[in-house]
Each structure stands twice: as C-alpha cells, then as structure tokens.
Length: 115
Length: 113
Image (cartoon, rainbow over all chains, first blue to last red; front, top):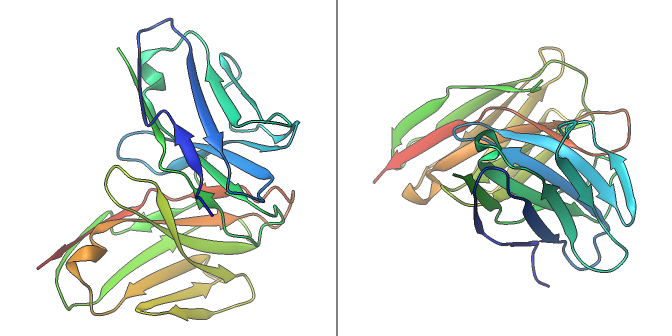
C-alpha cells in the first residue's frame, strides 16, 4: 500500500505564474488535508476536502488559492499569481476517517520556491 | 492562530540520554498527537493521546497529558543519533468533526553520537 504521494517534490515559479500541487491519498482514504510550512515554523492548516467537497477551508488565503479533490484523480492545490511569500513547503495528509480520532498520514511535501 | 507552543525550541543531548519536550495549548481538545519531521522531509506520526487519557507509551516514547494545565510532554528515553529531528505536537478540536490538526512551533532535537 503506497503512502501519500505528492508531486512535484520541488517547484520553482516566477512571480505572477501559477503553481499546481498534486496529492494522491493513500488507497482507501477519502479525506485529504493540505498544510503549509514556512521556514523554521510548524505546519498550518489550509483546507480539508472529501471527494468533490470542500469541508473546511478556514485556513486558506482569501485570494489566489484554491483546492479541489475530484471524483477521479488527485487532489490539487492551485496558487495563482504566486508571490515570494508563497515560498514554503506544502504538505498533504490523508485519513480514512475525519472524526478527529484517526491518524493523518503525510506525504513528503512539495517545496515551492518563488523567484 | 497556532494552538500549541512548545519548549524548548531547541534541545541538544548526548546519545543515551533522555529527551523531554513540552507542549502547551489553549483550547479544549479531542486528542493530542506528536509527530516527527526529519530535515527536509514529511511528518511521521508518533503517538496519539486522547483527552481522557493521562499517559501513553510506545517503545521508547512516553507521552503525558494534563488537560487541567493544557499541557503535554513527550519523553524519548535512551536517545539515539537517529532521533535527531524536529518534533511537533498537534491538537484536534472536539468540535466541528473536521479532524484538522493545529500544530505547535516544534522542538528541534539534536542527539550527538
């Protein structure tokens, strides 16, 4: 059973470009979480999705950021018109349940660098 | 805002010694979890302790939870060089049923061989 997969592992974008980060949850997991980690800091929750539904996006910036988890395919975190402050590691986690008692399994992360 | 605060921010010990890291949080919780992150890598789940539990063990790890003080500690006994990593506590709220994790700032542990 493969773990959570994220790609690309490293992504370099120039200011104003778009960044698309992909996350494939573990087999059998239908709940996906995205977190952002700035250098030397802990992870901060961004969004929680189930298949075709955004359940909690309270941690998402109001503009330029969007997320989806389609019926088929990976979850996508999309950042439009990137700025230098978007440079961070973005982690995806999945779990089979979302009632707060289940472990979340983290992917290796995508490290975004905005030039 | 972040839920947890951890101390110390950095800890350096010799191999074989015990390492203790503390985490404080602000609001009520469903459970508290500890994760390890090796440099430049993803997070690895270590242990979960529920709000009605006071202590839990897993191998060389011992976690305590004091809900009256809103604090938790992670003890790593007989440390090894391979334990060198950052350690994060994360809490889950009892409300909302989203299961999202609220992380502390982390403790960076260095175990010298």
